[in-house]
Structure formats: structure tokens, C-alpha cells
Image 1 (cartoon, rainbow, N blue to C red):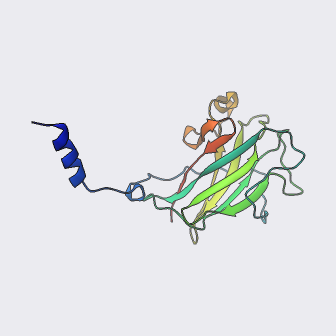
Image 2: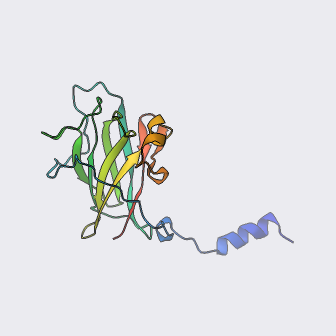
Image 3: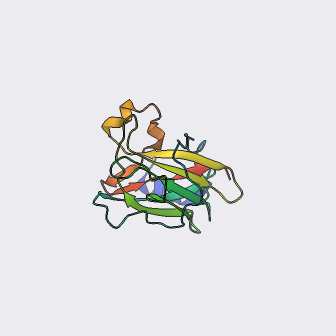
Length: 175
């Protein structure tokens, strides 16, 4: 007969599988970089421009291998439109790169980018594990009217939003 005591005793004998030992799946879907990518962005975690009145956004997460192991030192290069839906093609407004920490974690401080004709609200990113291939993709915001009109939108690339100012997304890359 199964009793609470027997269930607890059986659970104690089961091997504990750490999160990193679980399979993370096929990886984060790739998407086009679009026409506005620029090389040589500054290294920084905050893209916030001092004069901007746009709502602030913090995006956090991890870079993981397909076996769910954290990727230390992964390059993450972010860029997005400004509060008017325009990209800075002369300078580096709302552009920058950073590296994941020892646990594969990153933190991006920026604004909520505006939509522009034909596109849903999104953030571009390139992610590369040390010595690995570059993953180019885009992050989307949940429940946005523009998502259904954007031919590039993918539900698998929607950030988890704690509230309007805090998003999360874990990238799964080939290492």
C-alpha cells in the first residue's frame, strides 16, 4: 500500500538530475539580422540614452548549450529601434554588446522599442558561444497587436514578461 512515508522514502532514493543535465531542446530559432546591423558596437549592459522618455526595460536570462549547460563568456550583441521606431545608422544609440557571466547569465538595460511599419515590437540579438557559431535572432513582446501582422514573428521568440518593464529569455545555442 502506498503511504506518504513510502512515497517520500522512494523519492529520496531517486537520483537528482540537475537542471543543466536536462535536454534544452533543438536551440533558439534563428532569424534575419535585418538591414540595420552594425559591427564594432560598444561593450555595455545599458543602452539607455539619458534624454529618452521611453519606458525602461530590463531583459535577463541565460545562454545555455543544448544540454542545458551554462555558457560562460558568450557574446551577446543587441540592437533595436528607438522610441520613434527608427534605427541609429550613424552612431550606436540602442546598440551594444556584452558577455555572459560564469553562469551564462546576461542583463540588458534598455527601453521598450517602438513598432514601425510592417514590424512588431522586437529586439535584435546575435549570440555566440566562445568558438561557436553565431546565432542571429530577434526577441518579441507578448500580446502585441503587431505580432499577428509581422511575417517574421515567431511565438518561440517571445520574452516572458514579469511586468511591462522586466522581460526574460534564455538562449539555447550549439556549443
